[in-house]
Image 1: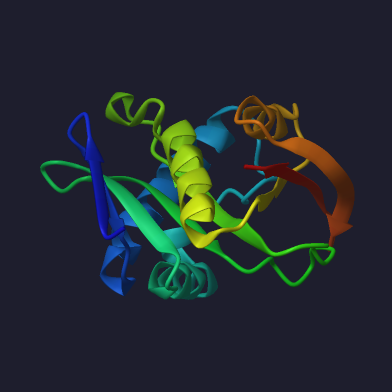
Image 2: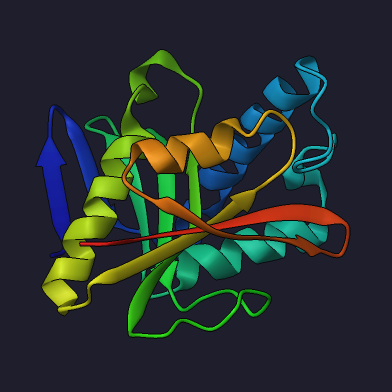
Length: 174
């Protein structure tokens, strides 16, 4: 599937050219986190000002499993990157699609887009003939992020630490 559209939102393949828009979303979320007193998840500095984070986002947007959701007018609302598991994650016991990145704007026009992209990940797994999907997320704070993935049908598999960053691994079968 090259593009999917509904309700004026298009899900399309991403490219390195989308990195500035995705970095803008990261910066928006980091500012929101900091306003709530959560600097532990992604730090307190905008990712667009950090060369290593800019490089990571450009690399992520360039992967074959990278997608963006955008409004019909071209404004990027969210990004999803599917692929192989991150190196710090315990190996899967069966073929899988791994949600490497999900980030969505806090703007009202993006409401529900994260859940929609997770459903899109399910669809991509079905199209690939793969049953297992996994994702990891920040396991600290209030636990709201893990609960979001649980609300999308994922179950907690393991909690672990990645260089002082609490991580929660979740998975589901489709």
